[in-house]
Image 1 (cartoon, chains in turn orange, green):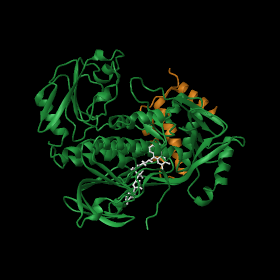
Image 2: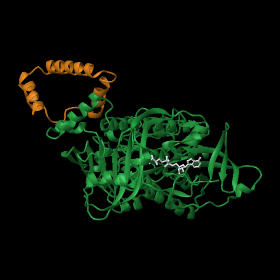
Image 3: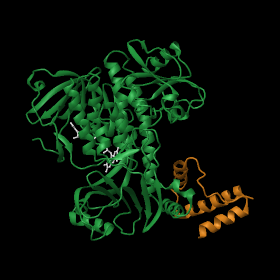
Image 4: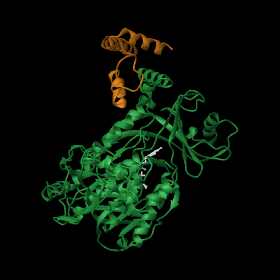
Length: 62
Length: 541
Ligand SMILES: Cc1cc2nc3c(=O)[nH]c(=O)nc-3n(C[C@H](O)[C@H](O)[C@H](O)COP(=O)(O)OP(=O)(O)OC[C@H]3O[C@@H](n4cnc5c(N)ncnc54)[C@H](O)[C@@H]3O)c2cc1C
C-alpha cells in the first residue's frame, strides 16, 4: 500500500504539459470534458490502489 | 529624405562620407554586415578581432531608445568575455536569484535560482539592451585602436540587393544619395522585419500569437522594491491578464502587462492610461517616472535556411521568438559565436565553403529548441482555449500547496545554449565514463582554476584540453592549429573541473572549437584520431 506522490515525479514537465494541451486541441468544451473524464478513469485504473486514489480525491477537493 | 524610424539612446556613429561613395565602380569588401543592432555589432567584433575587414551598414547613427531585451544569459556573457567586454556588462548588470509567482492576490510560490558554483558568470544579468549594445560598440572601438579593420557606417540604408553566385551587390542610400558596394559575403543582421530577407524573397514562416503586451520601464522615485522577479497570473489589480515586474540597473523597473489582442495602441500608450495601470498595481502613493513605453506583439518563426548563397542571416532576421525566456538576443549571440570562426576559416582558404552550411544546420537546430521553449512558456502564460486555461489555473492552484505542480508553472524558462547532439561537425565521443553535460556537441561549462576560470584560458582558436594526460603543446593539420591547454584535476581544489570534465574517467582529452563547443573527446591523445576529428569539425569530412 503506497501513498500519493506529491513530489515532482515527471522528468520533462514542459513536454508533458504541452502534450496534454495538444491532446485537447480542436475539441469543443464538451469533448474536452469527456476526454478528461476518460483520462481520469484510465489513470485511476493504472494506479489501482484505492487508498492512493482517495488521497488524490481529498487533495483536489480541498 | 532620410528619416529615423526610432529615436536614439546613444548616437555613436554619425554619418560621414566614405571614400567608397566617390568612386565610379563599386568597391568590393570581404564582408558587409547589414544592421548594427546587437547581433550586427557582435558579428563585426568577432570578425574584426580575427583581422577580417568588415563594414557594418546601419540605417541609423547609433543605438535605439528603449530597452527591449533586459535578460542576458550566462552563455552571452561568456561570449562577451571572449570578445573582451564581459566585465563592463557584469559590472553594470543586476543579478537576481529570487522569483515570486502570484495569482490574483495570493503568492503561488517563490523560487531561488540557486546559482551553480564554479562559473565566472551568473545564470544571467538584467541590463538594458542599449547598454549591452554600447559595451559591444566600445569594444569595437578598442579593437579598432589595436588595428582591427572594422568600419561602421551610420545612415547607410540598404535599399536593394543583387545576390550573385560568388559575391553580392548592395545599393546603399545615404544622406548624400545612393552608392553601390560589393561584398564577398553579406551577413544580414537587420532584425525581425529584415528588409534584406524580404528583398531576396525568402520565407519567414511561423506562429503568430494573438496577444499584445504593454511595456513600461519606470524609474522609482519613492519606494524601493526588492531585486526579485515578480510574475502575476490574473492579478487582482486587473492591469493585465498577466504582469511582470523586473529590476534593471539605474533604479529602473520593467513592467510588462498582457493587455489582449484587440487594443487601440494609440489610446493605450497615452501616459494617463499607462499610469492608470501602474497605479492600480503599485498603489496611488508610489512615485515614478515613465522612462520608456511600448506595445509589442510577437511571433515564433524562423527562416527555413539561414544561408542563401553568399548571404547569411543571423539574429532576429533569421529567427524570432516570444520574449518569454529571453532567447532573442541571447540566441543571436550564439549565432555570431558559431558563424565567426567558420567564416574566418573559409575566408582564409583553410576550410571549404560548405562549412558555412553547418552554421545553418547548428543554428536552425538551436532556433527550433528556442522556439519550442518560448512557445511553451507563451502557451502557459496566455492559454489559447478554455480547457488550456482551466489546466493552467489548476496548476497554479495546486502549486500553492503541492510541490509536484511547481515545475509545471511556466512563466519563462532560463535561456540555455543548446547541445549540437548528432550534427555533422561532431567527432567521436570516446571518453568512457565522461559526464553527459560535456558530451560531444555541448558548450563547455566553465570551471574554477587555482587562478581565474577555465573559459578564460580558451582564447579564439581550437583548443586541446588535456586533464591528467600528455599531448603535444600544439598540433597542426592543413593550416589549422590546435593549442594545448594542459590541466590537472588538482588545478581545481573544489573538484568542479573533475566533476564536469572527467566524471568517472581518470584522464581526458577534449577537442574544443573556437566557439567553445566540444567536438570530440577521448581518454588520451592519439594524433590520428585528433586529425580526423579536426577535419570533421572544419567540414572536410
Ligand atoms: C519586449 C521585448 C523584450 C525582449 N527581451 C529580451 C531579453 O530579455 N533577452 C533577449 O535575449 N532578447 C530579448 N528580446 C529580443 C531582442 O530584443 C532581439 O532578439 C534583438 O534585438 C535582436 O537583435 P538583432 O541585432 O538581430 O536585431 P535588431 O536589434 O532589430 O537590429 C537590427 C538593426 O538593423 C537596422 N536595419 C534595419 N533595416 C536596415 C537596412 N535596410 N539597412 C541598414 N540597417 C538596417 C536597424 O536599424 C537595427 O539597428 C526582447 C524583445 C522584445 C520586443
